[in-house]
Image (cartoon, rainbow, N blue to C red; front, side, top):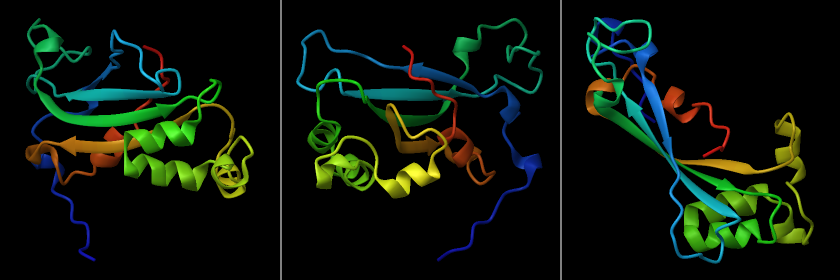
Length: 160
């Protein structure tokens, strides 16, 4: 296994304190089978425009929405309180999601609703929806500073 090496902070292309996260969830006009059970969310990571940002992350009065996208994350929300089967919804979406669902959800093997005991022991409040971080990408110039986990751990409350 290759050891993780970090780049010096002086090489950061901007101040990570001003990174902005923009959440997006689109719902198709035509209903689909698992629409109440599975939601796909996309997060764009916007960089500060330059080093002279003000306290709101804006630069020289410019629109912060013009900031370049320097990363992306994709998450899936498996909703608990629906008529749908979360494992089936995950399985229909991708093999990766199915593996996570079959590991975490109790009902896959036993027919019982809820989470498996091992998962429940690790979670403070093991009830409700399950949020799965599927993918994280950062542009090369922003890599090597330990920001990947930060992007992966962004606050997400699931409200659109």
